[in-house]
Image (cartoon, rainbow, N blue to C red; front, side, top):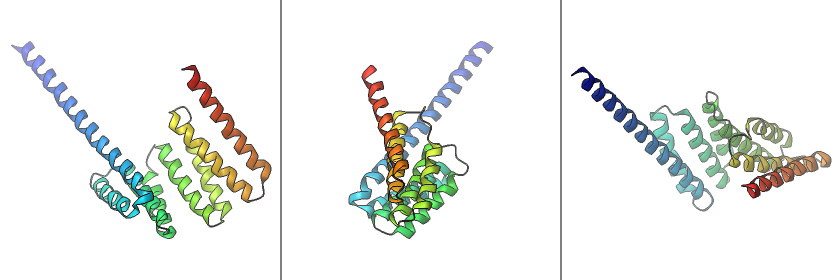
Length: 193
């Protein structure tokens, strides 16, 4: 009788854990879908994007999910930048950094720092912009996935543009060359596969 009880317990435990992981997977999938939907709306319908990110922000704060809160704040920052409300945009990006201070999501830290750097660059505050872009570069781990590599190359080009605007042409060129080298290496890896 006891072996059957143990087997039943193990089966129920497994089903409970499996059900919990499925529930978490569905929750994560819907969060990612909302983030993607918000990002797609930013260019054409920034007000719709703001609505999506505000809903995500509300849900993430209720569940104490600091990473999703930071992603929602970052999305709000991008949406307000699309509406040319740069002060509000910066405010949301700074808030996102605050939520990321306890996170280990280095790529999200890189994205938010990049966005702040781009905003400063827009107003010719090149030193401040470079500080944030170089901070973003520090957070990228090129061993994680190819999307990080693509973002890293994009970041190198952003840095190159700012260096060029500061008339630091040699430094600007070195960032472009590094980005080109990385792009070539990425192509070489794809052709081998």
